[in-house]
Image (cartoon, rainbow, N blue to C red):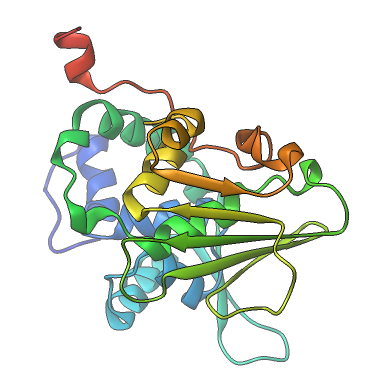
Length: 234
């Protein structure tokens, strides 16, 4: 429980005593999406301090939302969502729907988090829809100062993210700006439109570049129109 609580029998108040502190719901998001190791969760929550992440994970463990286990034969721990945590998935989805509808106009340049984007792209690769045993995808971000180039290496059913050249032949190149790639994954702009506008250059075999969404799934929130499009239609 955070602080002294709200002193109310309302179930919303009781839930917020557990979930209402900063970062807690985003940690739940990462756990539900498959993040189990501390450094992986930090990738998805780049601005949280290790101390605070440790504190929040401990609180969730105490409340029965997380199971903490020692990694066999290695240093460190893994964290797994309990049934109580997984039951929050519809809540997380509805908050995401609300955010897409009502909070998108609050976006600023600093919100386009490159590390979070690459984590999401890694999770969005459909390995079964890529030919062969290995596919290498390279992203060149034209508007990023540090770590402009990233690789996704897809081997069978595993996807690895690299910030250093893995020394493998590249199958598909994305030459794109960070904000544009975020908008593509979020479904705010189509690949066809981005290419036509000169915001994206896709290089690779036509079988892979003509229908990127076939093997690179968009966000589950793609296609949700912002409220202004509903309230003020063109």
